[in-house]
Image 1 (cartoon, one colour):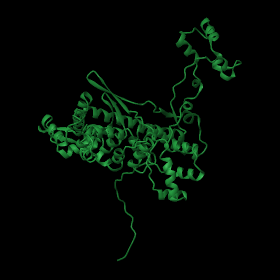
Image 2 (tube, rainbow, N blue to C red; image 1 turned 120 degrees about the horizontal axis):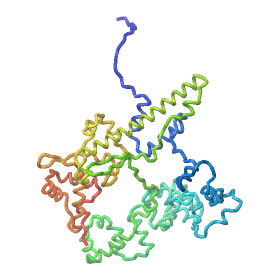
Image 3 (cartoon, rainbow, N blue to C red; image 1 turned 30 degrees about the vertical axis):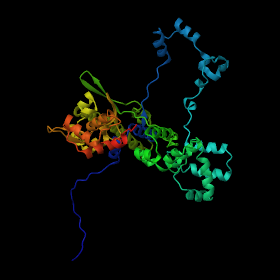
Image 4 (tube, rainbow, N blue to C red; image 1 turned 135 degrees about the vertical axis):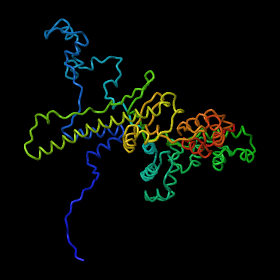
Length: 477
């Protein structure tokens, strides 16, 4: 059979992800802070893109706003008075003939002349705090090297995450030397830091506080698991003490700090800036997109009107940057428009939530919103990622409004988030000495709300809300 080459025409459809389309999709799923950072990066790279700034008012307009209209351009009596009373020394600063320091008020705070960031101090880290103490103590250079290795091996709670053998290999020392330095580090502030387990951490603190009661020492060294699981009766029987005495021992143990390094957490709090606000006005809800801090973009007039490219390369560069800037502004507009449409749809579907709260949250899936606004589910999924909205009942992530359903006895459905809120309320109002079990919660939901829910589903929701079981919530004393 002979092989030969042939040419033929064939029509086919193919989806091509252009860079502009990829950028538009990326902007949809960016959070508010990431969006601002992305716009600032584009402003730095694209010379044809610039931010619209508010025009500064002329000095005459500012004077007229404060003292009324001034006639003509001549120096009137009001203008002369303003010139006489102007605090030129404050305006000129260091360039004034009279030193500014001679005019500082006695009641002025020294920090008033400082930059804002100069008044702030960085939060001390656990490693830096321990290193400072070691350098003020009589540690030798060899011991200081071991101590630095120990501090570098601590986790966020202050526990040692490396073994003595590993530390000895890291520092080129012996296990005995590491143990000796570790003993001293554990007695620095905070006491109990660099412990290898909670038992060792509490025992070190008890040693420093000079707690010598043998029952207390044995409770910590041998029966921490029994105390955690609230197995009190065997302990009372073993030590031949009363429940009141055991409670006193427990109060002493609870006064200790099992996480000595937690207060030196290096992570700073993250504050949520909502992407939109939803306000109730009479019987309707108003949606306001939060555009504070988002740069307003426009094409640079200097390049668009006054710049004349000299060659093909310059012309192609300008055209490419112009298309990029126009597409970015179009993508930002489309992002805000899509976000508004999705919020409108969510308000329509979850009207009960916005009126009465979490207990009225109904089941909702992405397809419901996508069909309502005639968009694809993937677009709705992207626009609801990392976005927050401020409602009359608090700030919520947009993903919060999408939840699965549970069937009621009458055939209708209720949202899983509403069931979680009800479970949380039942547990919050329970008797601490007789906590409600998962099975009892399921029965209550069936009787009062006609919700068909199994005990294991209640346990799953309780675990998701980080709520302990009834046995661990029970208070014996």
